[in-house]
Image (cartoon, rainbow, N blue to C red; front, side):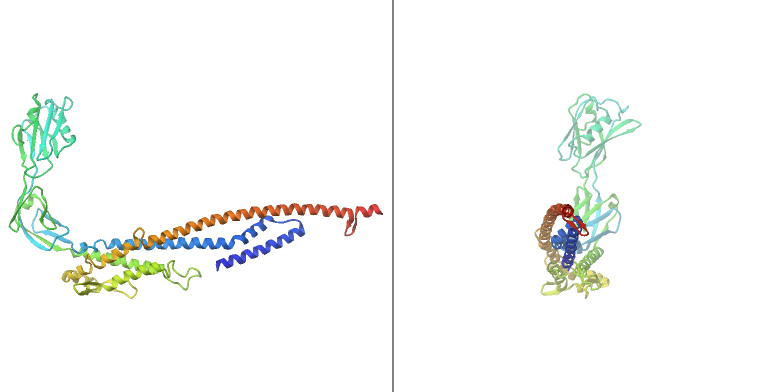
Length: 483
């Protein structure tokens, strides 16, 4: 319709231009700018309108598809914990006493365990026995070699610039290849003491300090890590505990592998008495994940509806949504709706979303019956895990379906590529059309310029002939001479 209106307007302008030409010939003056503009518009208006409409349609469709992609991406994100069932296999751990805590991961199962901690893992700490006073006293020069457990020994060069206790501590801490030893200086009544602390627990991680020096540096060396110049402030020892009577030994207080899917964290307070560790399903996490999925799916349904809606009360040309009747969007909506409605078949029986409290509404959205969902999680965990199993569960199927639409080279990507190509072509045509309009303008201006010159010549000739032969109510020069 807009093309027809533009054509009518252009024809009207052309008619006015023609009338102006006639008037110009009669009155020997013309508004050539208006005439040329009208003539160019008459030639290009229909194509310009058509091209503009084409670009507007492409841009509107691309924007709508962008909205659709965002909605699908949000839905896919909400499925992340439901595609493999991990959101439904979350557990919490609680201990009956102090000093023991635990976290759970994949593989954990509900249960309770009696845990008795004998000792926790500690790191070795060595303190130089003899104090040095003052602390700035030069110790000696040479190399200190520090070994921590089975790690590669670290060699520290001590020279005249760092051969005090503070200098040695700094050299140890900043040395490359430090295996995990921290050096400090503690000053008391009897002078300053070098303190070496292992950063790694476990009975195998003892420290040894040796030197090649014979000028005093050997006074802070230790031949076996626990005697000769040092006292052992803290032992290197493993954690010792039992789980349901089974003895366990660990170099660290963070223990993984002792109970499948459970990480134990031991503190000193745990070594006072036996206590019970209880692993229970975390239905709160499962509820949150399922509700997030329902919210994201309903948002997608709402987005799809707005893109395909029809409003008869809106102005002509804007009543339909930007993707109304779009085959691609209809295919996406139908495929996801089918997944939602058909349920999951396992072991010869089909479990629907309604079984766990997720009910399909007439408008295609889902509603959550919180009581029914809570009961399903507490008493019918098998149904919940079936609906969201990692093989053909709703989350897995829906995630794979969305991927086929969103992936590079997928349905949406192919559509967007085609639209961008068409838009680029339309812009090229618009540029060509503008160049054509400029060419016509120059052509018409040149023609009217020539016409104006001709009209001026005709006016001069008319005046000459009137002077020569006479005109209305006047005698020309020839008549006067004849008389």
